[in-house]
Amino acid sequence: MQDIDFLPKKFRDRRNRRRANVYRWVGAAGIGVLLAVAALLQLGIQHQLKAHRNRLEAQYLAAVAKRDQLVTLQSKLTEHRNEAQLYAALRSHWPATQLLVCITAPTPESLSFRELKMYQEIASVARRREEEEEANATAKAPTLRDFEFFRSERKARTAKIDVDGDVMEVSELYEYLVKLNDHPLIQRAIIESVEPVAHGDDSGRSEFQLQVVLTPPPGADAVPAATTASR
Picture 1 (cartoon, rainbow, N blue to C red):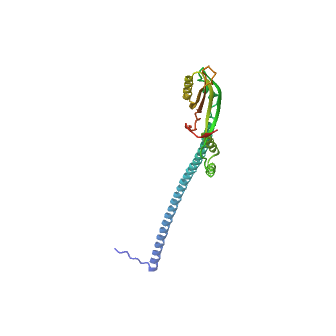
Picture 2 (cartoon, one colour; picture 1 turned 90 degrees about the horizontal axis):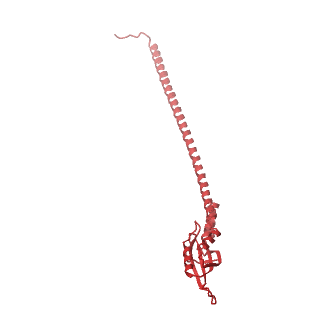
Picture 3 (cartoon, rainbow, N blue to C red; picture 1 turned 90 degrees about the vertical axis):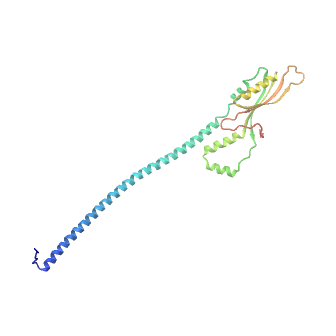
């Protein structure tokens, strides 16, 4: 059965417009809700990103602080190491009394000393250019510069002891020489001369001269057997 609408046409148009307006308002409200939900979601995401950025920034600042602390500790460690090397080098000279003991302790009964002379020889080495030394000096810490200067000066010096004396039995002199060469403080000991005492002396004594080259302290290089040097 077909429904018959007896309302005039203008009323039907008005009713249709009202329905269309309702649909528009419903659609607009839905779009507004969707926009509001999207805005809330965006705000939530921004908040999460901000919180994550803050956490990362805190971790970054902590890492930078640890890096700076590590650089400071490494700098202090290098400085302390340089100071330790310098102090060790300054304390590494052999005491004169210890050297005298190592020379006189293994003395045979028939051997006597007239003179013991301790000195240093400075080897003839080529010096660096002054410009290079100045450039290196400005690039290094003061303690390291002092240590390297002291080490270079010590490497250029050779500590020696000249021994003059008398001996009744030359064989005992050679035995004494062997004992000297076995001593850890002595790098080498050599006989420079052995001569009988002048005529008129029937004691059988012989005059001798020895040269003793001392072992370099720790950190210095050993001196070769033949070297050009000046006292």
